[in-house]
Every structure is written in structure tokens, then in C-alpha cells.
Amino acid sequence: MNRKNTGGFATRAIHAGQKPDPVTGAVSMPIYAVSTYAQTAPGENTGFVYARGQNATRFALEAALANLEGGASAFAFASGLAACDAALALLPAGSHIIAADDLFGGTVRLFDRVRGPAAGLSFSYVDLNDEAAIAAAARPETRMLWVETPTNPMLKIFDLEKLGKLAATRGWMSVCDNTFCSPAVQRPLDYGFDLSLHSTTKYINGHSDIIGGAIIARTKELADQIKFIQNAVGAIQGPFDSFLCLRGIKTLALRMERHSANALAVAEFLAAHPKLERALYPGLKSFAQHELARRQMRGGSGMITATLRGGLQPTLRFLKSLELFTLAESLGGVESLIEHPAIMTHASLPAETRRALGIDDGLVRISVGIEDADDLIADLSQALNRA
Ligand code: PLP
Image 1 (cartoon, helix red, strand yellow):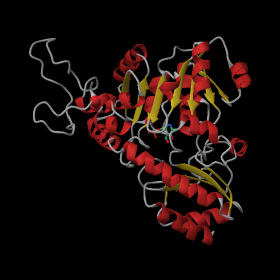
Image 2 (image 1 turned 135 degrees about the horizontal axis):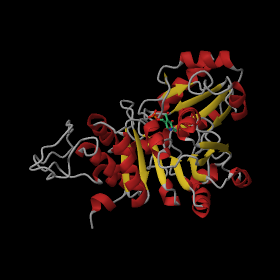
Image 3 (image 1 turned 45 degrees about the vertical axis):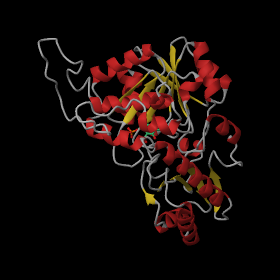
């Protein structure tokens, strides 16, 4: 038995797919900064020919990701959106995709303004907890179901087991953007999903120092197609960023435990605070979909969405008064971040859509880091006093 690849999650996060460097025995994967490889005779080579197709540092990252998500293979891309784009490239022109109605805005922009018009794809945005709505949206040319759970920023949870089965029954390829969880918290392929997809920029790398993406394919057949697309389109993760991401993964299990524990403590504090109208966190017992979250997530991850009473002005005063929480877009790093979706990440959505989703002027999205929970709560408390 190879415990490096079959042990518990924390063991595999450190060892899966990793071997000491064959030349020096270096225990960490070196950065192979190279574009091409020497051949002994025309067509005679080591399997490493040109670095868009083969890079040992990227391969080590991909092996770790495939193992942790339980897939046949993984592919690392230059960004999360490049990974989304590669998944869409699996579909022939004319395909229809049923997607969740509360997706990351950049994904919707890619769908509606790039691949929709350029590749002849069409999209229906549906509440994926409503089976009748999915059935009503289905068309003969539907080929893909695209899920994000929990959603951003409303933290709506979709039932992966039900959706995985539904997609398989209908013959649709199923894709889950697992960015908000990482495989330490949720593993979509275990529910029959065909692809798990990440902005590795977030929890997987975890240190806010790279932009990256990944697709993990459940079957070899799909993996072969994505490998072809990755090389043919070329939006690969470079060796330096692959190295950083791989280093980040070594602490993924530890980090996600701490993110979840800190976020639960912060959410409990916020939910009880009189200046807040509500605090949403899947780990809270008061969270409407807590039971479903408990079933498919291991811990609640680190994302909280909260609404301050009184609208924009007190919310801006609160945001300006924080010391430990940095006002910034993105999420999933070791440091705590906070942002105002209506003005920042979700400003591109029409005001009507924002209202329908519940993204009002008092709403903030918090990415809880791995600092001491007491310090985070003290900082939120003093800033709320100034709100
Ligand atoms: N998917 C989700 C859920 C995201 O939050 C993001 C980025 O915020 C992306 C995809 C896109 O990733 P990237 O910014 O790495 O291109």
C-alpha cells in the first residue's frame, strides 16, 4: 500500500503524487523554469518535449489536486476563469448550459459576453434547489449543469447528491465550482460530478500571492479531453506559481480547520450583535440550510455574509474602522478580508438583480482568516461600535 497516496487527507495534502527530486533528492519539488527539453534523436525523448505540454512542477501540483479531489487527473490553469473557459471548450457549438442563478460575476461575464456569442453556447440561470425549474429549463441541446455551492455572496447551498444524480440521469456533464470550499471541505466528484473546478487563487493556494485555476476530472475519458484543451489553448499555470500553489496545499487541511473554526466563532458573535440584521454562515445552527451543509461539507469553510442595520453610511463607517480585516476583493487567504459586494465584487450586476439576490447596501462579505479568533472578534466589535 502506498500511504502517500492513500492516507488521510492531511497526509495526502503533503505527500500525494510527490517524489524527491531524482537528481538531488530535494524533498520539495523544484521550480522547473524551462520552455523546452533536449532530445537524444528526432522523436526520441523522455516524454518531456515542450513545457506548455509538460512541466514537472506543474505535474506535481496536478497530481496533488487529482488525489485530494478524488479524480482521475487534474489540470492547472493560469486563473480560475481560464479553468472555467477550458471546461466550456468541452462543448460543441449550439450547446445549452443550465447554471445556478447565483454564480461568481466573472463566470457569468465569461458565459454571456464571451463564450455565449463566440462559441454559440446558451445559458439558463436557475434556482438549482427547484427541480421543477430545472426540468422547465431543460432542452434537447442541454449538455451541462454548472453549480457553485455555497454561492457568492448569499451562501446558498445546492444539494450535490441530488444534482449529481439528476445530471447523470439526463446525460448532462456536471461541473461544480468548488472554490469556496476546497477539497478539504467538500468533494463534488464523490457525488458523481464529472468536473470539480477551482480558482486556486483562493483556499487551495491560500496565501493571496498567486492567480491560478484548476479542473479535476472524474474519468480518464474527460481527463484526456481537458489535457488536449489545456495544451491546445495554452492557458497553463507557470512553474513559479505551480510551486507556490503546491506549497500552499501542504497546509490545506490545517488551514481549512482553522478557517472553519474561526468563521463559526465570528458568525456566532455577529448573529447575536444588535447592530446586525442577520449573519449567514453554513455552520450556524440558525442557517436555513444547515442540515444540508452539514451533510455535504466538512466544516463550514471561512465565508460569512452579514447585513448591518441602517444601510450604507453605518456600513461604510464600520468598514473604515476595521484594523485586522483588510478591505479587498478575493477570499480564501490566511489573512482576513472584508468587502462590500454592492460597490465592489457585484457592482457589475444590474441593481434589480442585486436586489432580487438580497445584495443590499448594508451587506458585507467576510473571508475569515486564520488569525486568533479573539482578535478578529475584538476588531469587529470595536468597528461595530463606531458604525
Ligand atoms: N470561481 C469563483 C467562485 C470565484 O470566486 C472566482 C474569483 O473570485 C473565480 C471562479 C475566478 O477565479 P480567478 O480570479 O482565479 O480567475
